[in-house]
Length: 442
Image 1 (spheres, rainbow, N blue to C red):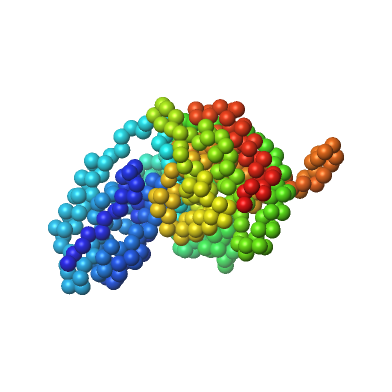
Image 2: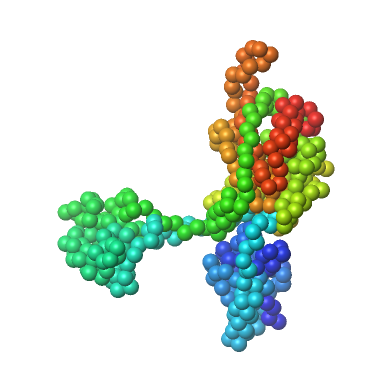
Protein backbone atom coordinates (compact mmCIF):
# COMPACT_ATOMS: atom_id res chain seq x y z
CA UNK A 1 0.00 0.00 0.00
CA UNK A 2 1.39 3.41 -1.02
CA UNK A 3 1.55 5.93 1.81
CA UNK A 4 2.34 9.62 1.55
CA UNK A 5 5.10 11.35 3.51
CA UNK A 6 4.20 15.01 4.03
CA UNK A 7 6.16 18.03 5.14
CA UNK A 8 5.18 18.36 8.82
CA UNK A 9 3.67 21.52 10.25
CA UNK A 10 5.43 22.16 13.56
CA UNK A 11 3.94 25.29 15.05
CA UNK A 12 1.11 27.63 14.16
CA UNK A 13 3.30 30.10 12.27
CA UNK A 14 5.18 27.52 10.21
CA UNK A 15 4.17 27.62 6.55
CA UNK A 16 7.06 25.94 4.75
CA UNK A 17 10.41 24.26 5.28
CA UNK A 18 13.49 23.56 3.21
CA UNK A 19 15.03 20.14 2.85
CA UNK A 20 18.49 20.12 4.39
CA UNK A 21 19.33 16.48 3.63
CA UNK A 22 17.67 13.15 2.91
CA UNK A 23 18.81 10.33 5.17
CA UNK A 24 17.33 7.73 2.82
CA UNK A 25 17.30 7.08 -0.90
CA UNK A 26 14.78 5.46 -3.18
CA UNK A 27 14.70 1.71 -2.64
CA UNK A 28 15.70 1.85 1.04
CA UNK A 29 13.65 -0.07 3.58
CA UNK A 30 12.59 1.97 6.60
CA UNK A 31 10.92 1.19 9.90
CA UNK A 32 8.55 3.38 11.87
CA UNK A 33 10.64 5.93 13.74
CA UNK A 34 13.58 5.89 11.32
CA UNK A 35 14.88 9.32 10.31
CA UNK A 36 13.86 10.12 6.73
CA UNK A 37 15.25 13.61 6.28
CA UNK A 38 16.42 16.81 7.93
CA UNK A 39 14.47 20.03 7.38
CA UNK A 40 14.96 23.70 8.17
CA UNK A 41 11.95 25.78 9.21
CA UNK A 42 11.74 29.48 9.94
CA UNK A 43 12.84 28.74 13.51
CA UNK A 44 14.57 25.37 13.66
CA UNK A 45 16.43 22.52 12.04
CA UNK A 46 14.65 19.25 12.70
CA UNK A 47 14.68 15.58 11.82
CA UNK A 48 11.56 14.00 10.29
CA UNK A 49 10.75 10.44 11.28
CA UNK A 50 8.94 7.77 9.30
CA UNK A 51 5.39 7.13 10.46
CA UNK A 52 5.05 3.85 8.57
CA UNK A 53 7.35 0.96 7.69
CA UNK A 54 8.00 0.13 4.07
CA UNK A 55 10.19 0.82 1.07
CA UNK A 56 11.02 4.35 -0.05
CA UNK A 57 9.43 4.42 -3.50
CA UNK A 58 9.82 8.03 -4.59
CA UNK A 59 11.47 11.23 -3.30
CA UNK A 60 9.76 14.25 -4.87
CA UNK A 61 12.22 16.97 -3.82
CA UNK A 62 15.94 17.37 -3.40
CA UNK A 63 18.31 19.08 -1.01
CA UNK A 64 17.66 22.80 -0.74
CA UNK A 65 14.09 22.66 -2.07
CA UNK A 66 11.49 24.62 -0.08
CA UNK A 67 8.15 22.86 0.33
CA UNK A 68 4.85 24.03 1.89
CA UNK A 69 3.68 22.34 5.07
CA UNK A 70 1.38 19.35 4.51
CA UNK A 71 2.62 18.89 0.94
CA UNK A 72 3.60 15.37 -0.13
CA UNK A 73 7.38 15.04 -0.29
CA UNK A 74 7.81 11.29 -0.72
CA UNK A 75 6.01 7.97 -1.10
CA UNK A 76 6.58 4.83 0.99
CA UNK A 77 5.00 1.51 0.11
CA UNK A 78 5.30 -2.26 -0.08
CA UNK A 79 8.05 -3.80 -2.23
CA UNK A 80 5.71 -4.47 -5.14
CA UNK A 81 3.97 -1.09 -5.13
CA UNK A 82 4.47 1.31 -8.03
CA UNK A 83 4.27 5.09 -7.84
CA UNK A 84 2.65 6.32 -11.06
CA UNK A 85 3.37 9.54 -12.93
CA UNK A 86 -0.19 10.61 -12.14
CA UNK A 87 0.45 10.26 -8.40
CA UNK A 88 3.59 12.38 -8.69
CA UNK A 89 1.80 15.02 -10.76
CA UNK A 90 -1.05 15.22 -8.24
CA UNK A 91 1.41 15.59 -5.36
CA UNK A 92 3.32 18.38 -7.09
CA UNK A 93 0.09 20.15 -8.03
CA UNK A 94 -1.08 19.89 -4.44
CA UNK A 95 2.15 21.48 -3.20
CA UNK A 96 1.73 24.32 -5.69
CA UNK A 97 -1.82 24.92 -4.48
CA UNK A 98 -0.70 24.92 -0.84
CA UNK A 99 2.04 27.41 -1.62
CA UNK A 100 -0.50 29.73 -3.22
CA UNK A 101 -2.97 29.56 -0.33
CA UNK A 102 -0.33 29.87 2.38
CA UNK A 103 1.57 32.81 0.92
CA UNK A 104 2.58 34.96 3.90
CA UNK A 105 0.75 38.23 4.47
CA UNK A 106 2.53 41.50 5.17
CA UNK A 107 4.51 41.42 8.39
CA UNK A 108 2.80 43.02 11.41
CA UNK A 109 4.40 46.12 12.92
CA UNK A 110 5.32 44.35 16.15
CA UNK A 111 7.09 40.98 16.29
CA UNK A 112 5.23 37.98 17.62
CA UNK A 113 6.76 36.17 20.59
CA UNK A 114 9.16 33.52 19.40
CA UNK A 115 12.53 32.13 20.31
CA UNK A 116 15.71 32.50 18.37
CA UNK A 117 16.32 30.01 15.59
CA UNK A 118 17.64 26.52 15.82
CA UNK A 119 20.33 25.43 13.46
CA UNK A 120 21.70 22.14 12.20
CA UNK A 121 25.15 20.98 11.18
CA UNK A 122 25.45 22.11 7.59
CA UNK A 123 27.35 20.98 4.54
CA UNK A 124 30.16 23.02 3.05
CA UNK A 125 28.52 25.87 1.11
CA UNK A 126 28.92 26.40 -2.60
CA UNK A 127 31.64 28.96 -3.24
CA UNK A 128 30.91 29.99 -6.81
CA UNK A 129 29.68 33.58 -6.54
CA UNK A 130 31.87 36.67 -6.07
CA UNK A 131 31.41 39.26 -3.38
CA UNK A 132 28.82 41.78 -4.50
CA UNK A 133 27.20 41.63 -7.89
CA UNK A 134 29.22 41.25 -11.08
CA UNK A 135 27.41 43.07 -13.89
CA UNK A 136 27.77 41.22 -17.18
CA UNK A 137 25.85 40.63 -20.37
CA UNK A 138 24.24 37.23 -21.13
CA UNK A 139 26.68 36.72 -24.03
CA UNK A 140 29.60 37.49 -21.72
CA UNK A 141 28.40 34.97 -19.14
CA UNK A 142 27.96 32.31 -21.80
CA UNK A 143 31.39 32.96 -23.26
CA UNK A 144 33.00 32.93 -19.82
CA UNK A 145 31.40 29.60 -18.94
CA UNK A 146 32.45 28.04 -22.26
CA UNK A 147 36.05 29.21 -21.88
CA UNK A 148 36.16 28.62 -18.09
CA UNK A 149 37.07 32.21 -17.28
CA UNK A 150 35.84 33.57 -13.93
CA UNK A 151 33.95 36.82 -14.48
CA UNK A 152 35.17 38.29 -11.22
CA UNK A 153 38.75 38.60 -12.54
CA UNK A 154 37.67 40.73 -15.52
CA UNK A 155 37.40 44.51 -15.84
CA UNK A 156 34.33 45.47 -17.87
CA UNK A 157 34.50 47.87 -20.79
CA UNK A 158 30.74 48.28 -21.13
CA UNK A 159 28.49 50.97 -19.64
CA UNK A 160 29.13 51.45 -15.91
CA UNK A 161 31.87 48.82 -16.02
CA UNK A 162 29.60 46.06 -17.32
CA UNK A 163 31.47 43.00 -18.62
CA UNK A 164 30.69 42.33 -22.28
CA UNK A 165 31.60 39.45 -24.55
CA UNK A 166 34.58 41.30 -25.99
CA UNK A 167 36.15 41.49 -22.52
CA UNK A 168 35.87 37.72 -22.14
CA UNK A 169 37.30 37.03 -25.60
CA UNK A 170 40.20 39.41 -25.00
CA UNK A 171 41.05 37.63 -21.74
CA UNK A 172 40.76 34.25 -23.45
CA UNK A 173 43.30 35.42 -26.04
CA UNK A 174 45.62 36.49 -23.26
CA UNK A 175 45.21 33.16 -21.45
CA UNK A 176 46.06 31.19 -24.59
CA UNK A 177 49.67 32.26 -24.18
CA UNK A 178 49.86 30.86 -20.64
CA UNK A 179 51.21 27.45 -19.77
CA UNK A 180 48.54 26.04 -17.50
CA UNK A 181 47.19 22.55 -16.86
CA UNK A 182 43.51 21.84 -17.66
CA UNK A 183 42.87 20.95 -14.01
CA UNK A 184 44.37 24.24 -12.86
CA UNK A 185 42.24 26.11 -15.42
CA UNK A 186 39.05 24.50 -14.19
CA UNK A 187 39.96 25.02 -10.55
CA UNK A 188 40.70 28.69 -11.21
CA UNK A 189 37.28 29.07 -12.85
CA UNK A 190 35.53 27.47 -9.88
CA UNK A 191 37.44 29.53 -7.31
CA UNK A 192 37.57 32.85 -9.14
CA UNK A 193 41.38 33.01 -9.30
CA UNK A 194 43.22 35.25 -11.73
CA UNK A 195 45.79 32.83 -13.16
CA UNK A 196 47.69 35.60 -14.92
CA UNK A 197 48.98 36.68 -11.51
CA UNK A 198 50.32 33.23 -10.61
CA UNK A 199 53.81 31.88 -10.82
CA UNK A 200 53.75 28.29 -12.01
CA UNK A 201 55.56 25.56 -10.12
CA UNK A 202 55.42 23.01 -12.92
CA UNK A 203 57.92 22.23 -15.66
CA UNK A 204 58.96 25.39 -17.53
CA UNK A 205 56.79 27.45 -15.16
CA UNK A 206 53.55 25.69 -15.99
CA UNK A 207 50.71 26.69 -13.66
CA UNK A 208 49.45 23.65 -11.77
CA UNK A 209 46.40 22.96 -9.61
CA UNK A 210 48.50 23.34 -6.47
CA UNK A 211 49.39 26.88 -7.50
CA UNK A 212 45.72 27.77 -7.88
CA UNK A 213 44.84 26.22 -4.52
CA UNK A 214 47.35 28.48 -2.78
CA UNK A 215 46.12 31.64 -4.52
CA UNK A 216 43.56 34.04 -3.03
CA UNK A 217 40.32 34.48 -4.98
CA UNK A 218 39.78 37.67 -6.92
CA UNK A 219 37.96 40.20 -4.75
CA UNK A 220 36.96 37.66 -2.09
CA UNK A 221 34.13 35.14 -2.25
CA UNK A 222 30.39 35.33 -1.75
CA UNK A 223 29.26 32.42 0.46
CA UNK A 224 25.53 31.63 0.35
CA UNK A 225 23.83 31.81 3.73
CA UNK A 226 22.99 28.58 5.46
CA UNK A 227 19.32 28.37 6.49
CA UNK A 228 20.35 28.89 10.10
CA UNK A 229 22.45 31.95 9.37
CA UNK A 230 19.69 33.41 7.18
CA UNK A 231 17.17 33.05 10.02
CA UNK A 232 19.55 34.57 12.56
CA UNK A 233 20.16 37.51 10.20
CA UNK A 234 16.45 38.07 9.66
CA UNK A 235 15.54 37.93 13.32
CA UNK A 236 18.39 40.10 14.54
CA UNK A 237 17.66 42.71 11.86
CA UNK A 238 14.01 42.61 12.91
CA UNK A 239 15.01 43.06 16.55
CA UNK A 240 17.26 46.06 16.00
CA UNK A 241 14.79 47.75 13.65
CA UNK A 242 11.64 47.27 15.74
CA UNK A 243 12.79 46.98 19.37
CA UNK A 244 14.17 50.08 21.13
CA UNK A 245 17.09 48.67 23.11
CA UNK A 246 18.64 50.16 26.20
CA UNK A 247 21.58 48.69 28.10
CA UNK A 248 22.61 48.37 31.73
CA UNK A 249 26.05 47.17 32.84
CA UNK A 250 27.22 45.75 36.17
CA UNK A 251 30.52 44.32 37.37
CA UNK A 252 29.56 41.39 39.58
CA UNK A 253 31.76 39.71 42.20
CA UNK A 254 31.51 36.00 41.36
CA UNK A 255 34.04 34.80 43.95
CA UNK A 256 31.47 33.15 46.22
CA UNK A 257 29.72 31.60 43.23
CA UNK A 258 32.98 30.13 41.92
CA UNK A 259 33.58 28.52 45.32
CA UNK A 260 29.99 27.27 45.64
CA UNK A 261 30.07 25.74 42.18
CA UNK A 262 33.26 23.87 43.02
CA UNK A 263 31.77 22.54 46.26
CA UNK A 264 28.50 21.43 44.65
CA UNK A 265 30.26 19.68 41.80
CA UNK A 266 32.33 17.75 44.30
CA UNK A 267 29.35 16.82 46.48
CA UNK A 268 26.84 16.01 43.71
CA UNK A 269 29.15 14.61 41.07
CA UNK A 270 27.38 16.75 38.48
CA UNK A 271 29.00 19.15 36.04
CA UNK A 272 27.30 22.42 36.89
CA UNK A 273 27.59 25.30 34.48
CA UNK A 274 27.73 28.93 35.56
CA UNK A 275 24.76 29.34 33.24
CA UNK A 276 22.72 27.06 35.53
CA UNK A 277 23.34 29.40 38.46
CA UNK A 278 22.54 32.47 36.38
CA UNK A 279 19.28 30.96 35.13
CA UNK A 280 18.31 30.11 38.71
CA UNK A 281 19.19 33.63 39.88
CA UNK A 282 17.22 35.18 37.03
CA UNK A 283 14.16 33.07 37.89
CA UNK A 284 14.28 34.28 41.51
CA UNK A 285 14.78 37.88 40.36
CA UNK A 286 11.74 37.63 38.08
CA UNK A 287 9.71 36.40 41.06
CA UNK A 288 10.71 39.48 43.07
CA UNK A 289 10.29 41.90 40.16
CA UNK A 290 7.28 40.42 38.30
CA UNK A 291 6.72 43.56 36.22
CA UNK A 292 9.91 42.60 34.38
CA UNK A 293 8.30 39.41 33.05
CA UNK A 294 6.24 40.98 30.28
CA UNK A 295 5.83 40.75 26.52
CA UNK A 296 4.47 42.94 23.73
CA UNK A 297 0.91 41.99 22.75
CA UNK A 298 -0.60 44.11 19.98
CA UNK A 299 -0.05 47.42 21.70
CA UNK A 300 -0.60 46.10 25.22
CA UNK A 301 1.56 44.41 27.84
CA UNK A 302 1.22 40.68 28.40
CA UNK A 303 2.06 39.75 32.00
CA UNK A 304 3.63 36.32 31.89
CA UNK A 305 2.89 33.73 34.55
CA UNK A 306 5.78 31.42 33.64
CA UNK A 307 9.49 32.13 33.66
CA UNK A 308 10.89 30.52 30.51
CA UNK A 309 14.59 31.32 30.06
CA UNK A 310 16.52 30.70 26.86
CA UNK A 311 20.18 29.78 26.68
CA UNK A 312 22.13 30.75 23.55
CA UNK A 313 24.03 27.69 22.32
CA UNK A 314 26.64 28.00 19.60
CA UNK A 315 26.52 25.42 16.83
CA UNK A 316 28.28 24.98 13.54
CA UNK A 317 27.37 27.99 11.43
CA UNK A 318 25.33 29.91 13.99
CA UNK A 319 23.42 29.59 17.21
CA UNK A 320 20.23 28.26 18.72
CA UNK A 321 18.28 29.27 21.83
CA UNK A 322 16.56 26.34 23.54
CA UNK A 323 14.27 27.39 26.39
CA UNK A 324 14.22 26.04 29.94
CA UNK A 325 10.54 26.17 30.82
CA UNK A 326 8.98 26.91 34.22
CA UNK A 327 12.24 28.00 35.81
CA UNK A 328 10.27 29.55 38.66
CA UNK A 329 9.50 26.05 39.97
CA UNK A 330 12.83 24.36 39.24
CA UNK A 331 15.73 23.83 41.61
CA UNK A 332 19.34 24.40 40.55
CA UNK A 333 19.89 20.70 39.84
CA UNK A 334 16.65 20.50 37.86
CA UNK A 335 17.77 23.47 35.79
CA UNK A 336 21.11 21.75 35.26
CA UNK A 337 19.36 18.59 34.04
CA UNK A 338 17.13 20.62 31.72
CA UNK A 339 20.00 22.59 30.17
CA UNK A 340 22.09 19.47 29.60
CA UNK A 341 19.16 17.74 27.92
CA UNK A 342 18.32 20.73 25.72
CA UNK A 343 21.91 21.29 24.63
CA UNK A 344 22.22 17.60 23.69
CA UNK A 345 18.95 17.74 21.77
CA UNK A 346 20.05 20.91 19.99
CA UNK A 347 23.35 19.43 18.88
CA UNK A 348 21.61 16.28 17.70
CA UNK A 349 18.82 18.25 15.95
CA UNK A 350 16.11 16.71 18.12
CA UNK A 351 14.49 19.90 19.43
CA UNK A 352 10.74 20.31 19.12
CA UNK A 353 8.87 23.66 18.94
CA UNK A 354 8.12 23.38 22.65
CA UNK A 355 11.88 23.37 23.27
CA UNK A 356 12.58 26.71 21.64
CA UNK A 357 9.36 28.76 21.74
CA UNK A 358 7.85 30.92 24.47
CA UNK A 359 11.00 32.35 26.04
CA UNK A 360 10.78 35.55 28.08
CA UNK A 361 14.51 36.14 28.60
CA UNK A 362 17.77 34.84 27.13
CA UNK A 363 21.27 34.35 28.51
CA UNK A 364 24.21 34.75 26.12
CA UNK A 365 27.50 33.73 27.71
CA UNK A 366 30.73 34.35 25.81
CA UNK A 367 32.98 34.25 28.83
CA UNK A 368 34.51 30.92 27.82
CA UNK A 369 36.09 32.70 24.84
CA UNK A 370 37.84 35.28 27.02
CA UNK A 371 35.38 38.03 26.12
CA UNK A 372 35.21 40.74 28.79
CA UNK A 373 31.69 41.91 27.94
CA UNK A 374 29.06 41.58 25.23
CA UNK A 375 26.20 43.89 24.21
CA UNK A 376 23.60 41.36 23.06
CA UNK A 377 20.56 41.80 20.81
CA UNK A 378 17.12 40.92 22.18
CA UNK A 379 15.30 37.95 20.69
CA UNK A 380 12.00 39.21 19.26
CA UNK A 381 9.18 38.43 21.65
CA UNK A 382 11.31 38.62 24.78
CA UNK A 383 11.75 41.42 27.29
CA UNK A 384 15.52 41.27 27.68
CA UNK A 385 18.75 39.40 27.11
CA UNK A 386 21.74 39.11 29.43
CA UNK A 387 25.26 39.20 28.00
CA UNK A 388 27.92 37.60 30.19
CA UNK A 389 31.67 38.12 29.97
CA UNK A 390 34.46 36.03 31.39
CA UNK A 391 35.04 35.49 35.09
CA UNK A 392 38.55 36.74 35.83
CA UNK A 393 40.61 37.92 38.77
CA UNK A 394 40.63 41.71 39.10
CA UNK A 395 41.76 44.13 41.79
CA UNK A 396 38.71 45.71 43.42
CA UNK A 397 38.03 47.88 46.44
CA UNK A 398 36.63 45.90 49.39
CA UNK A 399 36.09 47.66 52.76
CA UNK A 400 38.35 50.55 51.76
CA UNK A 401 41.12 48.17 50.78
CA UNK A 402 42.29 46.44 47.61
CA UNK A 403 41.46 42.78 47.10
CA UNK A 404 41.73 40.28 44.27
CA UNK A 405 38.25 39.00 43.38
CA UNK A 406 36.70 36.84 40.67
CA UNK A 407 34.76 39.42 38.67
CA UNK A 408 32.49 39.31 35.64
CA UNK A 409 30.89 42.07 33.57
CA UNK A 410 27.19 41.55 32.86
CA UNK A 411 25.25 43.58 30.30
CA UNK A 412 21.45 43.61 30.32
CA UNK A 413 19.70 44.66 27.09
CA UNK A 414 16.01 45.54 27.56
CA UNK A 415 13.03 46.39 25.36
CA UNK A 416 12.14 49.99 26.24
CA UNK A 417 8.57 49.49 25.03
CA UNK A 418 8.03 46.99 27.82
CA UNK A 419 10.12 48.21 30.75
CA UNK A 420 11.77 51.41 31.86
CA UNK A 421 15.18 51.81 33.38
CA UNK A 422 13.98 51.67 36.98
CA UNK A 423 12.25 48.30 36.55
CA UNK A 424 15.20 46.84 34.68
CA UNK A 425 17.68 48.21 37.23
CA UNK A 426 15.75 46.67 40.13
CA UNK A 427 15.70 43.31 38.36
CA UNK A 428 19.38 43.56 37.45
CA UNK A 429 20.38 44.63 40.94
CA UNK A 430 18.57 41.69 42.49
CA UNK A 431 20.11 39.29 39.98
CA UNK A 432 23.58 40.56 40.87
CA UNK A 433 22.87 40.29 44.61
CA UNK A 434 21.85 36.65 44.20
CA UNK A 435 25.00 35.83 42.24
CA UNK A 436 27.23 37.57 44.81
CA UNK A 437 25.57 35.80 47.75
CA UNK A 438 24.61 32.52 46.04
CA UNK A 439 23.55 30.38 49.02
CA UNK A 440 19.86 30.88 48.13
CA UNK A 441 20.40 29.44 44.63
CA UNK A 442 20.87 25.85 45.81
